[in-house]
Image (cartoon, rainbow, N blue to C red; front, top):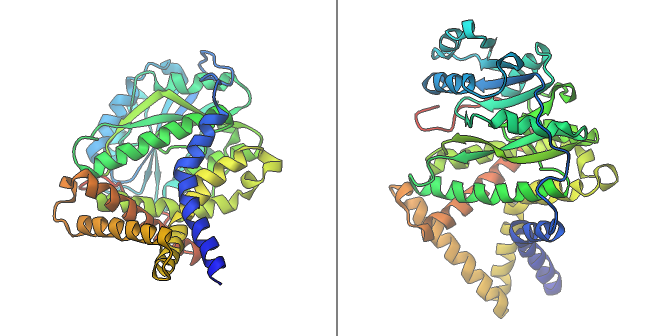
Length: 388
C-alpha cells in the first residue's frame, strides 16, 4: 500500500513539473535549428473582415474604432464590424456614429454571449479572411498585414498575433499576469515552429473565413474554432510581429475569476473536438494540446493529490516527502499572507507569486468542477476595473 501511495504521489508531483518546465524544454529541443518561419510567407492583401466583439464597452469602443480606421491595410479590402451582445450603456450609439466611414454594427438581442454573436456575424460576411478582436485591444498599424501574410501558405488555416500588456508595472497583479503571458508567448512561438500554436487569442487572431463552422453557445470561440481548423488538416501559426496592446484586469480577483471561466469553457470545448488529441489524426499536435491545455487544466487535481500524499508520507517518516510537505506548507502560508493582505496589488514578489499560483489553481479547480456538473458560463463581462 505504501509503495502505491509513493508511486501515485510522485506521478502527481511530476506532472506539474513536466507541464510547466518539461514541456517547454522539450519544445525547445525539438525546434532547435528551425527558422522562425516554417511555412510560406508573402505580402498579400485578401479582403479582410475585422470583427470586434463587445458588451457594454462605451468607455473604450471609440478608441478601438479610431485605432481600426488607422490601420495601414488597404481601405477597400477591410470591413470593420462591431458585434454588440445586447449592450445597454450607449456602446451601439457610439458605433453608429461611424456608419458613414464604413463601420457596420450587428446587434444581438437577448444577451446570448460572444460565441452566438460571432455566429450571427459570420452568416452576414463574405470576406476571404476574418480577424477577431476585443474592444480593448488596440492594434499596431501593421497588425493585420502581418497576420494575413501567413495565409500565402495554403496549409495555414489560422494565425494568432501577440497580445502585449501595457500596464505590467502598475501593480503585483499586472506584473504576475505579464510574466505568465510572456512565458505563454514563448511556448506559442515554439509550438508554431513545430506544428501549430494551440488555440487562438480573442484579442487578435485570424482565420480563412471558409473554415468557420457555427459554434455551440457554450463553446469558447478562440479555442474551439482553431481546433476545428486543425482537425480539418490545416496549421495554426503564431505571428509575433502582429501586435496588439491591452491592459490586464489590474486586480487579482478579476484576473483569477477570468481564468476560472476560461478553464470552465475550454475543457468542455476540447471534448467537443477530441480528434485533436488523436496523434493518428493530427500528428504531434496531439501531444501539444494534451501537454499545453489538458494536463495544465488538470494540474490542480494533481497538486491536491500530490500534496495530500506527501503529507501522509511525511508523517510516515519519509525524508524526501517531509521536504516536499514543508515546501507545500510554506507555499500555502505565503499564499495565505497574500490572501489576508488589504492591498494585494502592493504585495512583494515573494508573496504575490505564491498567492497568484495558488489562487489560479484553486479557481481552475472550480472551473473544472462546474464543467463536470454541466455548468458553463456563456455570457461575459470585461475583466477591466470598473466593468461588471
